[in-house]
Length: 121
Ligand code: 5GP
Image (cartoon, rainbow, N blue to C red; front, side, top):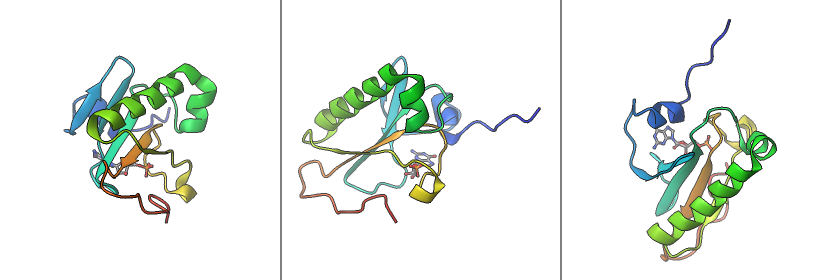
């Protein structure tokens, strides 16, 4: 049987590798992206590794996706000015590198506008 390696996010959730965690809930965790593309760049991640991307998450657990969006908003308010861009890279061709569903929360935190094309090559 081929067993997939745990994703880097599963290892963060398990506490095996460190991260700057800003939210730790029952079903979601959020931490700062290691390579920020905006003054505020958080990743909001379901704790389950069941869903590879947002399409699978939406189909498999729409309530968890809605909770993820609400958490993104809460964190954008707590860490920024409340305005944010929510990005779900879906598929390698779109820039997805970690195949464990997650959202990028990007915000200038009140310091001007986000550049167009953030997270898109
Ligand atoms: P994707 O490209 O899959 O949409 O997003 C993956 C994100 O995870 C990237 O923005 C990348 O910088 C971030 N990332 C990759 N490895 C780590 C890590 O070990 N720690 C943290 N905090 N972020 C990571």
